[in-house]
Image (cartoon, rainbow over all chains, first blue to last red; front, side, top):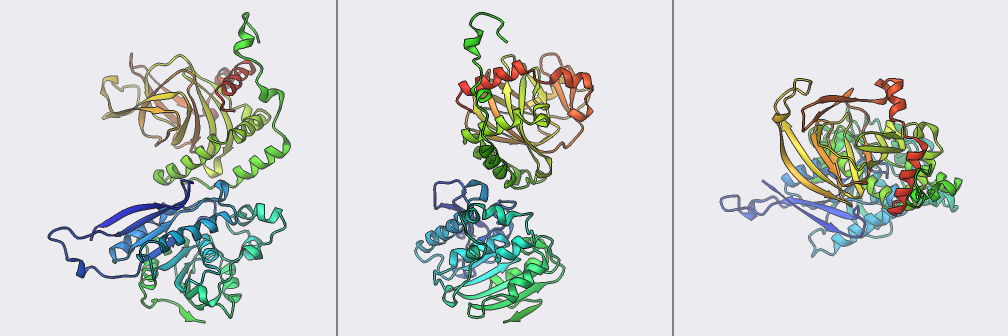
Length: 257
Length: 243
C-alpha cells in the first residue's frame, strides 16, 4: 500500500503545521477501497524537551508504519521554547492543531492521540478541560514538570521551557496538566525499561501520583527498549506501540490501574 | 584608521562600539542561546531543518544579532576567531561545540575567483545580504594534489538570493561566487575531517584548509582580523541594516 502526504497550517509560524500521512487511494489494478483496513486515525505529538532536540520529521517512520496499517496519521509540529513555544505557547499550539483537525469533516473523529516524551506533556496540556473523551497513549512521557525539573531531566530543559512563567510567579505545578475523566476515554502509559532520557524514577513518580479520579489508566512496560525505540518501527519495542495504537493487547508488562 | 580624505564618511565609527549592548540584553541573549537544541549533524536532513530555523530566528531578529555581535566583541575567545581570508572574512558570534553550534557571519570580499572545494564541517548558510552564484560539482578522482581540474563537473547551478537558507554536507564539492559584501549567517558542525580540499578552477592549483588547531602561530597571526578591518565590517553591517 502506498502512502499519501499533506500538510495543514494552523498559525503563521513555520512551526505551526500538521504533517499528514495516510493510505493512498488505490489506483487501477490495486485493491478496491473496501479492502483497505479501516483503522482509527492517529495524532502524534513528538518530544525533544520542548526545544526540538527532535522534530515532527523524526516521527515520519512511525507515521509511515501506521499508514501502512491503514491509519490516517497527523503529526503535530509546534513552536520550540526558543521560538515562541515557551510555556504555554507550545501547548496552545497543540490545542489549536487538534481544534483544526476537529473541523475536518469528521475525518479525525475518534483519533487515537499519542504523545512521546515531552510531547506527552503538551498533549495532556492541550486536552486538559476539553472533554474530548479520546483514547490517549503516552510513550515514555514527561508530564510532571516539578519532578522532571528536580531530576534535571533534559539537562535543565524544564526550567528553560518555564522560564518566563516562573519569572512571573508561576509554578511547575501549574504547568503540569491533570486530566478529568471526561478529557480522555482512557490513558495508556508505555515505559521503555532502558530509557536513557526519561529516568525510571520520574516514570515511577508520575504513575504513583496519577490522579485517582482521572481517566482510566493502563500501564505497559517494554523490556530492553530505549527512549526512541518506542517510536522507531525498526525496533521490536515499536511493535508493542503499534498494537496498542491499533487497539490490540500489549505483548509485555500490561497492568490496569 | 582614516587613510584618505572622506574615508571616515565611508566607514563611520560603528555605533555598536559606541553603545555596547546592556548586561540585561546579553543575559537574555545568552539564555536564548542556551535553550537551543543539540544539532544532530549525522542526520543532515534533521540538521538542515533545525539549523535553518535557528538561523532565521537569529538572522531575522536584528536586535538579538546586534547583541550577539556586541557580546562577541567583548569575549576574547570569540574575538580571536575573527578571521580574514582571500575571499571572505568571518566574525564568530557563538561557539558551542557540544551542541554542534558554531555560528558566525560570513562577510564576502570584493575579489572573487572560482575554487572548487569541500569543507571540514557541514553547515547551513542563511543569506542576509547579497547573493551567491552556487554550483555543485561531481568528480571521479581522489581529492589530492593529483586532481585534474578538468574532471570536476558542475551538475547544479543556482542563484542563492538574500533570504535563502542552504545546508551542505562537508563532502559536497561546490563553488560560491558571491556579490561583493554578501553577508551570510553560518551555522557549522564540529569538524568532520582534518583538512578541506580546494582546487582553483583557472589553473588547477590544489591546496588545503586546516582547522585553527592545526595551523601555525604565524598563520593564525596572518588571518586574525585587525581592529581596523573589524570596524569596517561592523560599519558595513550597520549600513546594510543587519545590526
